[in-house]
Image (tube, rainbow, N blue to C red; front, side):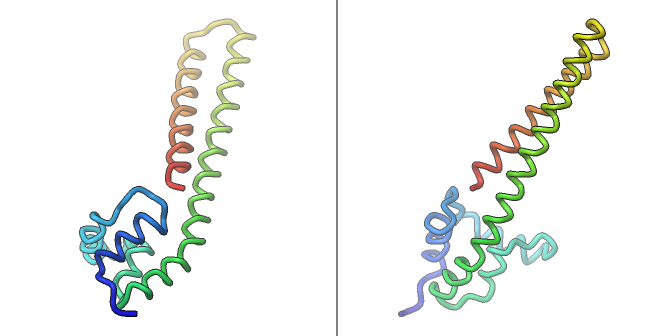
Length: 131
């Protein structure tokens, strides 16, 4: 098998292997950023540094995919747990408000809890979109 141009490999990774939105066009810029900021290294970009052929790259990425999927599932579960926690807190505030009458302070707490719940639900949707 002959060598595959890096551009072709990047397109293959971005579209076929990850199933995510195409990121092939941003990868060269990201590689420059990673070289300048090694503490912010990303495993998929780290693989690109040592590749010689497209086949090597595809093999490395297929070994990395289960780890990336596990991390995504963990982030998604964490976001779901946080959303559930804020939903429970909102219910406690609602119950407290109903039993003690409508108070301005409780109304503010309820609004804050609803805002937190909406943020957590956005994080859940974001984690699901990354899958």
